[in-house]
Length: 556
Ligand code: SF4
Image 1 (cartoon, rainbow, N blue to C red):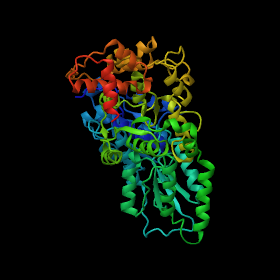
Image 2: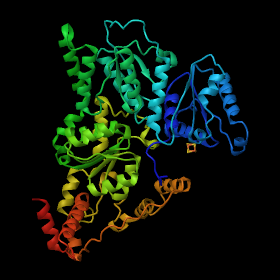
Image 3: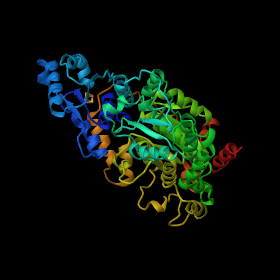
Image 4: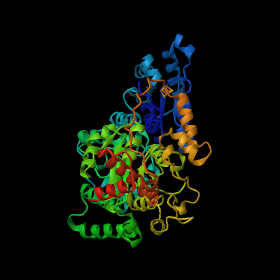
């Protein structure tokens, strides 16, 4: 058992639902208890889809367990086929149904439906949502692809598949528009996009492309590896998030497409240059003098592996931030994440325990957090600016406007989104100068954010998160309610042993007052360094002198 208040990913059948909902002409019959239909709301409310996901639940109840749940499942499959007339069907079990072992695959096969029926084995107690999506997509591809008799002969125009976008994906809709447009502008034809709006007939045609563009490895890497082994189709490895990565991506697809060599090489180079010049504003914004103050800002990054690794590159190479933490909940991509973190001289944080993430953020004392919806809550509690770069996300990260993360327009969006929560340069400067001012005082918040919540005081930092948030705003908040609901529904587990932090020396009044003169975005770091310094020397009291000694010690 694991005591869980927040979870970064849902169970694997939610991943399967994301793939089924993205497709057309596919229906998913899920053996699940009454109540599991809550997952529909992810699609109809968070993503605001106008139609229900193509999922039929058996919704068995306690009294059904005394009867024939297998028959219940067979009836549900039959009814779903008769009603929806899909071209292919997925069948599987949710966590509870996995325990009663009714074998959905065998039961559906016994019905002998005239369409492909794909059984899903999703171990709900070991795996999570993204793994479920990857496995579902892989099973669909390996079942439905029609392998050609002979190897494919390349046509005059290079052709690719675009793999990975699903329902409920963070900015998948807009990334897809951005990247398909970019590929077409490069003179590459799109054969199939999948699973996004692909039909089983489209999946059957996947072999009819020269290579695959993998946008989200968490979803598409397993299927792409199979396509490489079975059909010899190479796939892209660079994720086009950020202006530089987009340039590298263009180079990679140009090579895979056979562009950039031979007669058309010069024409292709001009086309690429024009594209970058016309669409890419973020490199100039990051170079302009207004961005000087961004240099060396301490940033902590956490998310799925794809977005976290990409964000680390953008943050350090394009915006000049200093990376002080890099982590992910995507355990399947631990190797890639460790390699990326090592590149920045860091140790990767690979965990799905939000308490560990919060402790790491707190210890790293960043000035900006780039993370998921969870890190947004943590950053609010710690009084640190934050922007969302990865799922899981709330409804506001399925915006009505075009807001990609990928391609040149995506890089423009990243620049605006990441810089927005930071104090603007002039105000930061004024804060350093006029600390006693009624407006630009030591605890002032970025005024361009209007009524933003005040940072939580150090005294309340150890309070439970929802209490601290309420203390900061004075009223119950969404997070408090989330937490209350999650507490009510969380499985009961053995309590964690309480860790007693080592006692720090108290601060004298004049040292505390001096500390408050330091602008808030670096104050937590100064406090921590001074306390560490006092601890290392076993000082009984932190005085003004200790503060200055620590400053001198750490700036050596
Ligand atoms: S834990 Fe129970 S309620 Fe939650 S998804 Fe699994 S089967 Fe459904």
